[in-house]
Picture 1 (tube, rainbow, N blue to C red):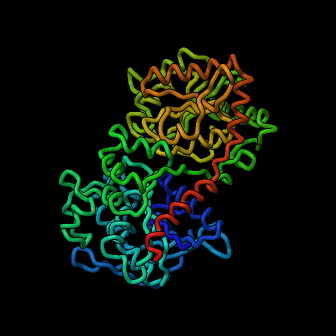
Picture 2 (spheres, helix red, strand yellow):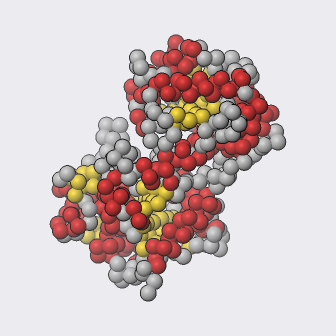
Picture 3 (cartoon, one colour):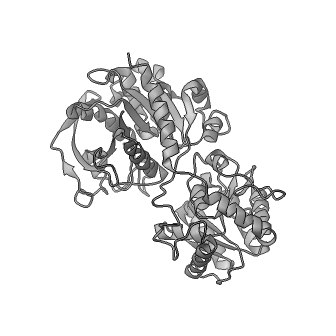
Length: 497
């Protein structure tokens, strides 16, 4: 099967979050299964040509936008780790005004959402078809990711299913429904679709233009990144006003849990932790990591006190308001009332960063680093006893899977991918892999952390059994990739004749 992944980012070239990791990891897994996979992303300013070993294909492309021709260049390289017999070619679309002259990916501090983002990603989605035609390579599957490429299925359905694309099917993966690409409809003419299509293709959204909604209405098959999130997004509470559209497409909409990169997030191989470990030497490995974690964060090196770790974006989605909110967050009470240590690494909303600095200056058992550092994230996963994720919603979540792989027990809200990957502790039987709560409020977080803290001091044998149970779970991409292949096969079946 020939598969083209269309995305706004892909690791290791450009990454702002889990999307980049998911795109590349899924592509690698599919390639190792024998499929011919290629990736196309923009060439942003920060994607250095020399550093990334890009070569100019010297193959100029052009597409029409609002009755004007827009040209671009194309660079390429192969994705590291892809099979030698079927390497994954990664294509980079070059357009200086849209991508090459901007320091950010989607925006910068003074302009969080670039004003020309709709034009940037209309252009990117349109030029993909010209790229394939110039390469004389026509995929069986066009797999678009999130709102930035949600118009790829739209263009395929309303005009591009010709000249080589007659049997191509489209897939749209929703990584986070909270980001939809909603812009003024004055940008619509750049699509070169008729105004009838504005309504027929699903663009219209309260007199605005909604990229993701149009993709949902147009793609042959849809999925999101966990089964529970697929259910939740069809409800008013989690649907971000697109629940009606998703219910309409429910027969073509499924949840496939993201996997994790078991080469990178593996305590047996991890170069960032002081002692590599597996199930047999888990206690020794985690003890050494805990000692190092406490020392690096300036905490007393006490092996008997539980450490709760966090590595997170400090945004409302992650439940930081209920945890760190001034005057009402539960972090102060947790650290004041309980015999534990809390460590955090992350960046995000300015108010939250400032509140965390204030808390850390007043609490001797709370330490934080307002930064993102890969090595610190790995050390927190290995050295913590518990990992706290009080998410408002969580499409898939990765850190809870990292935690389980490292023998660290998640404390999570019962939502999305967290609910699909963590089994709640049963203190009567000892079953479970973590600690869960239903309602997102400071009291629920406080009580559930307190429950985990109580179990640490009073049910240590059950804690150790849970750790081993979690480390035995398989969160590799192979299982997920097989489900994607089944979805692909179903999507192309109607074009096979």
